[in-house]
Image (tube, rainbow, N blue to C red):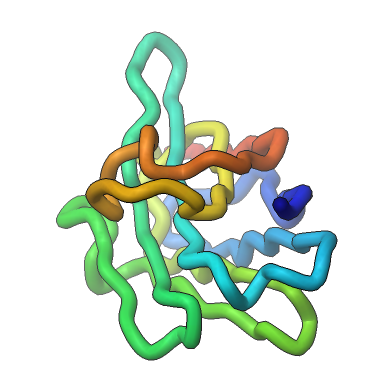
Length: 124
């Protein structure tokens, strides 16, 4: 298993950018596909992006496609989420997760290990 710690959240104006990082402990990081999810107040947790174990494939929610980029560095045991052209509706707690179960890449139930989350607030 891996332990995950997110960082990089903060307050940014609409149109700005942030880069989230998720550092993983353990030597098995490269054996997991990784995902980013987010949860806004009063809403369910939703899928944002996922990346394959090697980094060769990635998929995005329609709401962030073209604005967010997921990447990973297996040598550093870290996955990133570059967020550009941020909108107030992107405001949420962002979580990284390791896909340790069978199931759809966009389903939170397919991810068995989660970080504690990092707050992203986009002001209008």
